[in-house]
Image (cartoon, rainbow, N blue to C red):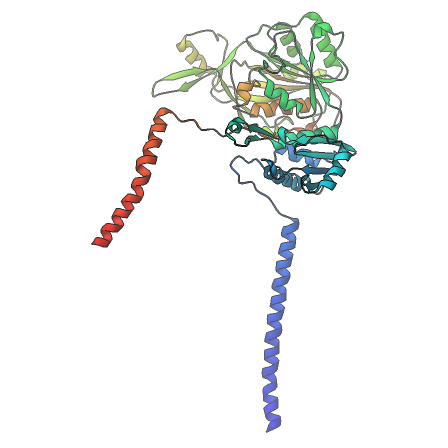
Amino acid sequence: MADKSKRSRRPGGIRRFRIGFNVLAQILLVLFLIAMVNSLAFKHYRRWDFSRDQKYALSDKTKRFLNTLKGRMRITVFFAPTTPITADVQNLLTEYQYAGKGKIDIEHIDPERNLSRAKELFDKYKVVTDESLLVLDYDGRNKTVKASEMADFDQSGMAFGEGPRVAAFKGEQAITSAMIDLVEGKKKILGYVTGHKEPALTEGTSPITVLKTFIENENIKFQELNLLDLDAIPPDVKAVMIIGAQYDFSGREMKLLRDFWDKQGRIVLLVDPSAQTPKLRAFVNELGIKVNDDRLMVFVRTGIEELALTRDVQAHFLGDSPITKRLADVRALFFGGTSSLTLEPERVRAASIRLEPLIQAEKGYFAEKDYNSDDQVKLQTDAKQSSNVSLTIGAAVEKGGSADQRVQLNSSRLVVVSNSTFVQDNAITQDQQGLDFISGSVNWLLSREQLIGIAPKIPKPLTFSLSEEALRRLRWIILVFIPLVPAAIGTMVWWQRRV
């Protein structure tokens, strides 16, 4: 009987052992899967910036530049915790480190606590300021970026005992600019033609201050060129910019410009349609682009039967060129007068010249030749006849290059836009797409296609302006409506309990 009872208990013991082994195996499998998921998540993850102004999200241009880094870049952070932008800088550098894919090393040093390490690096990098800063080190070269360069500070509250307030954070602009300086070394020279009443470059009086600062942040130096004082455009000038010349070039100046073009020169030309510059336009016409004597207009409906005529052009960028590839179908406003361009590629094909449209006006615009007329009936008739025609206002010219973007050949390059006011400060601060276009054009002219992209946004302080009527409504909301809501709820609760 004892042997039978032992034999009857054995299957039950084996069954319990199997159940326990299965549970243990399942637990180990779950732990293994959790470890694998965590390992994969640690190595392959994505980051998103949900802040209101996306001040930590890196721009397309910065990411493209970081992808071109061949060596490692070391960033040493000397920021005290009391600096107003310390947290912003740390968060931004985390994005740089993530986008750099292992090519960026960051060391944070509190100069108030780690004195010995701070002194060691201060001596190494020859730092002589007490201001919070970054030191970028690449291939034996180094550059500092101060806190004052990474933010605009509002000092108005200091008279009342308050500290400086951060009005706008522009850390990405400052850091990326310093990185480009380090990697490229010597600055590229962009010649800015003067002497024909072009916008001045002098700070304080210049209407293109934002453009100048923006371009110079890309390791480019502006150099004024008065062609009347030169025998030839200097060889270190890699590209020439002409913005809104009000007077025509002389025959000698045009010879210098043609010689520069024939020697694989690079030119960006923003034409003022109202200026009489026949020699300059003839040069562009030789290359297959005719600047027409007209103005782009559109009738906008302002009421049931009311129409208003506007000359501000809403246009979009075409994505076939490396200049505008990342601006494809993006809309931008071109204020002031704009004329149409006629491209004649067949006429110049034998000279190995390729034309490419860059900017076209939106549907509905028409090119009016009698643009000084006030006859609304005539203008409306002209609009109906030509409102469906595609009108080009920007184009690129290349002589001697290759249609295959993978093949890099020396060539002459030109960018033409029939509007010269869209790069001025009052236009760019409202609509940065034009600034991205000019930046892309300059980088294309300088054969820096890897830096063509959407640039960091121009920082703008968040401001609110309330009219007298709005202030009156706000007063009623604060003094009457807000106290009235809990009073009404309390009355309802009291009434229900009373009943």
